[in-house]
Image (tube, rainbow over all chains, first blue to last red; front, side, top):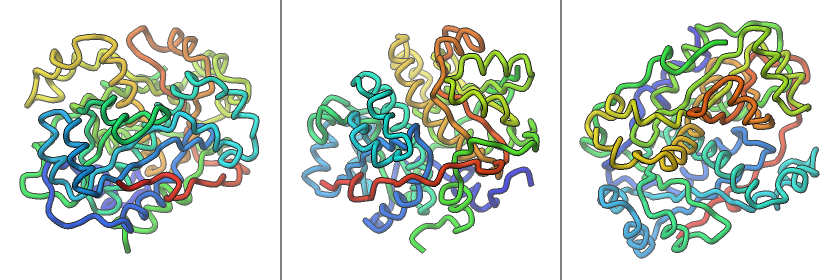
Length: 196
Length: 196
């Protein structure tokens, strides 16, 4: 037992979880999404900046507006997933820092006075939180279908504003039939890790 | 039970796990790091590109070279952690795509022929994998201390090359005494999630 995490949890989150490209009809509830958020919100970001923002696309009208900005190959699954979430990074996260990082309120002005520094930090830390969110969807017994194939400027204009940069769109639901491709190979430990 | 993940696993990975700033003397073994990697390698990235590369800093000489590039406040913990890992994104990940994404080998040339497109994708997907890696460290019963406060150009020059962009440095080990600050507040679900 090299890992402390139990084997069923390892399977649920990593080994048996797969990116889904087709979904069952079972709805995904707001209660499920709140439980996902209330679990993964604790995972770390720099200065506890937590720049991730989420738009849940629930209405048919909004779904069609989103589908129009997706890459061709992503349209059918984005149209039919029980729930679709747009994950974005808030480039003005620093406004919340005095609340989020109370023991060092100077961080707001010391590190994040300039917009380019904020954008860079929000992109990295928003991506970390996007990954935690994917793990959280799996923790809820659901499958995630994360996608970066979409017109980012179009999605930003349609659903966000100049201060929020889209990171990815995620289909969420129980997997349907033939939901996943056969698993592709992974790089070996030796390919990825070096020691100095 | 809104979540499928058992409560002990929720605590281990998210609710009770904390960023550590001090560590015990207990070593972190290569076997542990391999178990972490072999779990989190399955988590999703775009086109299965898996651009994360890891440098484990084990020798005293390499440790001192790394500490010299860390921000002042990060030096004591980087010097004393049982193990330190540099996480980087491989901007030339596309060379592996025909192996990693065998059912669509055209992806390499269709989407990633240009370096800026690769850098952008590697930054996002490398960050996703960095987050999975942090979750994996916790799955091993260890604490992570991720840091972005370092001279990125210096770390790149010292430990990497022009094709590898550092994402973060992570201290790894069992937490020591007073390892963590009191937990800072998080944004509420209502602050983060909107529905359209």
